[in-house]
Length: 290
Image 1 (tube, rainbow, N blue to C red):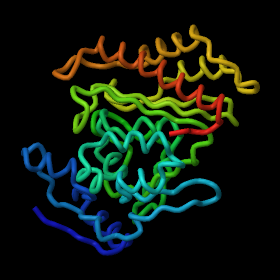
Image 2: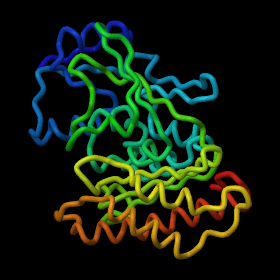
Image 3: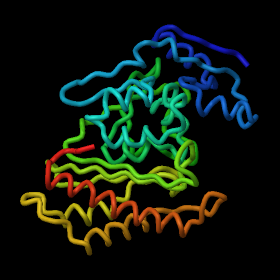
């Protein structure tokens, strides 16, 4: 197995164009596990850790552009106030050592249905910036990025450069159920984000279908039920129906971590609770308080 280590983004794109089968490596928290257990044997590893641009983030025209190499730890510490849902999800990822190495860009590349970063990106309306040497930059909405179990919309010569998302305009929450409290893959997970200016609620489901997905029927329902102008209380019946629609949006399997029926029920409960927390925060402060 060849080990390729470009020093610049241009070199990385050129290398990927010449070796489409080279597997990108950033933190290695997923890739190295698969190699160690002989699940995957790529023809080459494309180590991107020396590419400085990937470890940077910035604000451009009011939106955040976060490089694919920004770690979970940095997301929590540097962007937690602007991306609270993603920061909450990042806190659930593995151990401190894993969070120091792991990245959302790597999570996106792995495209696991259980990836903790995916639901907040979906709920927040994130867009993934991909690039190839031949075709240049392509912007892919998070809702279109996941195409199958551990498959994404990238072309063989493309690399993930960054993701774009607006700073949270209102409360966001992430909730996850696992077989223990820490260092565990999600049995299922859920993210919710309020978008008051658009009078809209965003959602994201994880570990509940072949790909991470939104609960679009639930979004449409609850967006029309909330008192966006007066910030009146959330009706219990509306919260309950929202949870039911989130559960119906899932198509989970039975496996060693949980049954499909349990996952649907858990998603309904998490959706109802996180929506209630977010709306109550919005009513009292208008912003995420945690």
